[in-house]
Amino acid sequence: MSTTPGIVLLAILGLVLFGFVAAVPIWRCRKLRNADAKLITPLDVWTKMITSCPCIMLIFGILLPSLYGFFGISAAGYSVDVNLDFSTYLRAELAEQYLLNVASEASAVQSRKTGHRRRRNEPWKDWTVMTYYLEKAQEANSSAGGRLLQEADLAAARWLAGNITARVDDGTGAHSRELQDSLVLNRKLWQMELFYQAVDSNAGIFTSEALHEIKDFEDKLVALADYDQFCLRYQSQDVCDYPYSVKNVFFTIPRADESAESAATMNIAFDGSGLLTDIDTVLQGFLRDGVEWWTDKDFSATNMKSQYTRATFNGGIPLPGYSSMNDRRKEQESKTQKHLESIFNSFLKKADIAGPDGLGYKHVKFTWYERQIQSYEIMYYLKEDVLWAGGTMAIVTFLVLCRIQNIFITFMGGLGVVLAFIATFYFHYVMAGFTSLTVLDFVSLFVILGIAADDVLLMFNQYSFADTRLGVDSTPQQRMTLAYKEAAAAMLVTSVTT
Image (cartoon, rainbow, N blue to C red; front, side, top):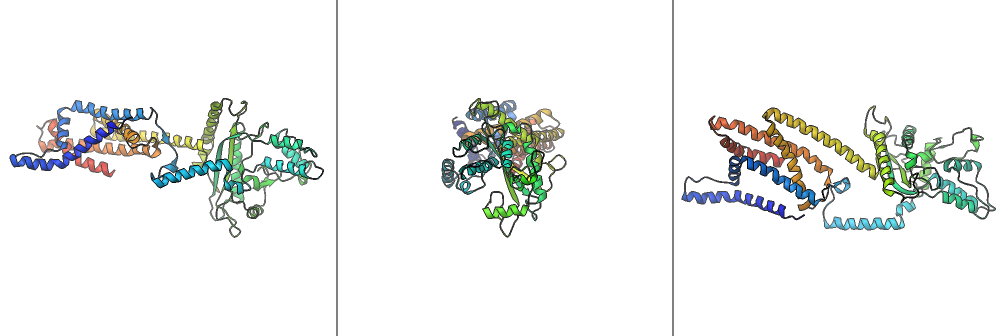
């Protein structure tokens, strides 16, 4: 879309401003010839046009912003892109920022090729329960003469992975390879980061009460409907990968059940299904092994407390019923998106609600990040804000109507708010080059609404009081001329300051 319409309008506005500046010198020159000459400004010309041809000016006032709005929406391809990445809102448009963006992108590409250095050095990152059993199988395979996995590990592995053959053959490694092949994960499609903050900063997050609330939160999350259909699954196995969470290392004491010969023969399983172990022992293990992923920066030998910890939940494809990740890929992604939205609507949304409608936890504050759910959440609350804006507009319109007692004038005032917003989109998209809107742009609706209501009431009050100065015999054109001149300065000041 050409910028010519915008340049033309800006040129006209420039001429109007020049007219205000040149009006006084021109008036003084005219007064030398005619002592009765009056000062004529662009405002006088505009007022004359409005009072002489009100219908034509009304149509012009509707068509002009509508036309610019059409130019803007056509340039955007008849669709409006809303930028939901808040981190880019305050990004400086500088050459230095451009170079920083290029360097960051190059670093991200290199990290995808070679792996992030911090991830490579983090021994606990991407560790899973299945990795634990695979390491035990490889250890058994490499031992002299070969040996079988312990019966408890074998039972746990079969419980976790269905029909995985956990036995290790002596010398050939065939069964070890079978186990390793069965532990290959599907393609990761989504990743949800959960962040836990201690309510009591003095006690920290690693308390019995807080850890039990974290466990309860994660247990409820994985128990949601169809979670096992969309989680990150192991190929050829009907089992989900366990979340990467502190729950797996704190709740490790095995539970005695009917399937176990005795509790004494059961090994520790890092799956979060056991009882709470000794907290201090685990924290000392963090310090010994240099585990920093689950603690804050202040965690140390002299400060065995952390205000925060975290967990990671992964989901992947192909979904059950699909032969591969490319089998009706868009359909799988669409189902996954709907599932993530259902997680937000039925569970995560309650994390921000206090009282009986919330999650009801007293020792932990829950926050989370997942790219697809975040976009859905922003649009969810944005729609709510639009409804609030509509309600606010309705209330303001009602109050203006009560004061003016004229439906037509009230309607035109509301129409002006809409026209102002859509006309500005042309200058935002075409002239300024911003190809997407932000959430903050929608907040401007409240500002425009306030300006419109203020201007309408100012103009109406000045028009109502004009007959007291001009007399009851004054014409509507005379009252409107006086009202416009009196209200123009006030509308300008209030609009600029607002």
